[in-house]
Amino acid sequence: MAKIIAITNQKGGVGKTTTSVNLSASLAASGKRVLLIDLDPQANATMGSGTDKRTIQPTVYHILLGEKRIKEVSVNATQGKYDLVPANRDLAGAEVEMVELDKRETRLKAALTEVNNDYDYVLIDCPPALNLLTLNGLCAAHTVMIPMQCEYYALEGLSDLVNTIKKVRVSFNPKLHIEGLLRTMFDPRNILAQQVSEQLQKHFGNKVYQTIIPRNVRLAEAPGFGIPVMYHDKNSKGAQAYLALAKELLNA
Picture 1: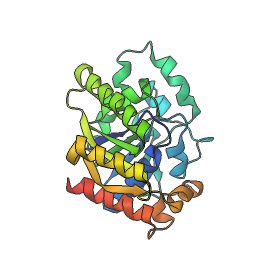
Picture 2 (picture 1 turned 60 degrees about the horizontal axis):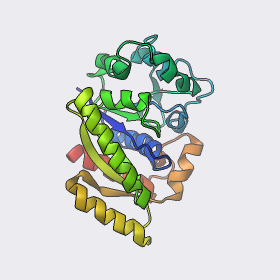
Picture 3 (picture 1 turned 90 degrees about the horizontal axis):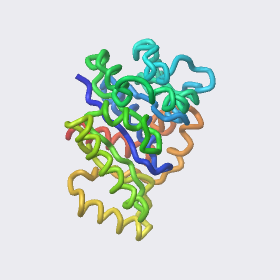
Picture 4 (picture 1 turned 30 degrees about the vertical axis):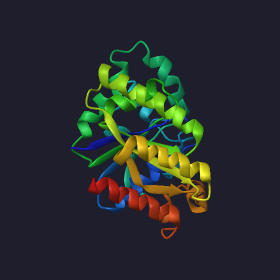
């Protein structure tokens, strides 16, 4: 049975998509069967996996509306060696169209039941907002991975996200819990980053991953080529960090 992890943070630009794509590739490189679901209308995970969002059809939009099954939509991200449920701009309209549908919060969860035994891990790249799309991701997931930069505002946003997770647990998904907090874009020369990192470890203890994702040029370059960083430069600090994160996740 697949372990389903929602990768989310309502703050944008914290490395959610970078983590989704590169963790998927790192888990796949470890021999795991991986499905990545792009739940963000920006479709950056789709592009970063080597699939053109401008031409791809059908997408996760059709799954949420009940028009297609996951097996009919998923494509192989050949460069990353994982499967992808792509997205495009159509997804932005899904929220409006889903409002009047039955069980609108759990439509992704229902769709995933038929592929539960086909994968070891399902990663869901959620949009940078606490909206109906993110709610679908949280209702479908077993755990939540929270990428975050070590900045002051990140701590404020984290408390909002934790409260949201608690509400989802009460109303829709009683088994949902935090998988871990991932420190991203980390610069050890930044004193504030070190202080925030220490606060995270103090308050969340072993929920904070030991692996830290550094600021890295290769990580920033890889999406332009539509490939995970480990296939762009496996020896880069970014690639090695995500391989280490996959190992930490597998050994947990």
